[in-house]
Image 1 (tube, rainbow, N blue to C red):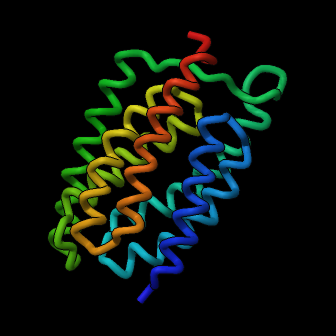
Image 2: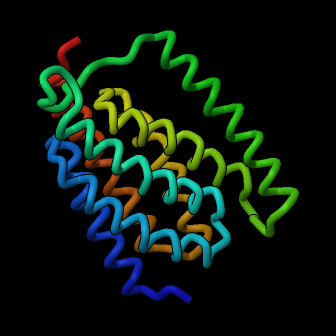
Length: 187
């Protein structure tokens, strides 16, 4: 139902938004909100329900990220790129696995999703990565690299070729984001 032109428009906005995130530019947030809004309708049409939940989270979390990047931190000057503790990363990984399984079970039981667990994997770890992006945690880029490779394959299986290319480009931009943020990381 949602045509090629919506995929193109959403992809262009999303790529601009992710690139702006690599530059720590607060405009990433409003651009990402628009992209996620459009993408929601593409994904719902393809029965990628967990991805739709992620899109809703991403829109809401974008307000949080926008605020943090503009006014968070000391003296309301925005926040800095930092590293997460090993314990935090282990905890987030466990939460991601549990939510992948739980959400996958819900989708499998109550929807027509053909790839409930893969869809849930992206959504679960995407929520974690998006929250970490809002908080400028450098490890967010590593999570994005992994889940974008996975989601590129999901898009291909659903005939969403433009979005699969977007995921491939996201992966490259995420590598750049990690390398760029590493220069600014304060701990």
